[in-house]
Image (cartoon, rainbow, N blue to C red):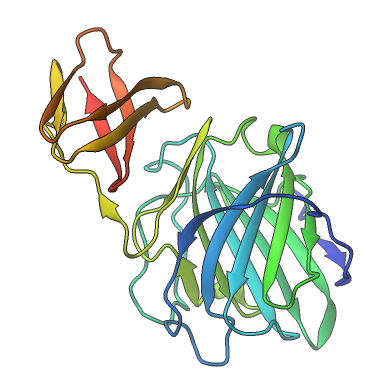
Length: 264
């Protein structure tokens, strides 16, 4: 397949005016090379007509002429298939292998050869014809805008993001977000993760007939397509019946955090 490379100039035009972003992950400062950007936050937003999605990567240090951004997207929500994320340049030396990607998005520039390169690679490492817009109006973040139809058709996907230098396309990111696991988007809801988030305590898992939630408060349970199956304010140890539920993976959200439930 012919390699498709899109070179553009940095500009201050905003493609995200008026968008309300949801923070999906945060990262501690200081776990990247001191001279690099050091990722701190990952956030998303949907366009008003919900046909496009925005991804925003924020970093602690100002963007220079040598920079790189990465999005690894598991668009079919099956993290075990696809291609592994190369992380040979990772500063902390602890790669996040929680998922493989179906699409790898790269934005980078070498100051000796001005012009920003935008690439989208498939699971075979080949360039695709997918195009997207970027917003560089802030020196401390970069936002990418994709048509949902080009990256799976909806916002249900898993994500690992990263920053680095212009060699991010060959050596991988120097800092990733999150450091472990992956960011999970589900239709109808977003699952925020950060390095200090607690998980929901419940049992059994996998489950067949019921589960018990260990802590009191509001409980919401969604299936993998974002359909709400259960919502209630409960007491600690409350028993939730699952007799009529379809087999599959569900997401439990409470005030304590979130968890993944497998119903057999």
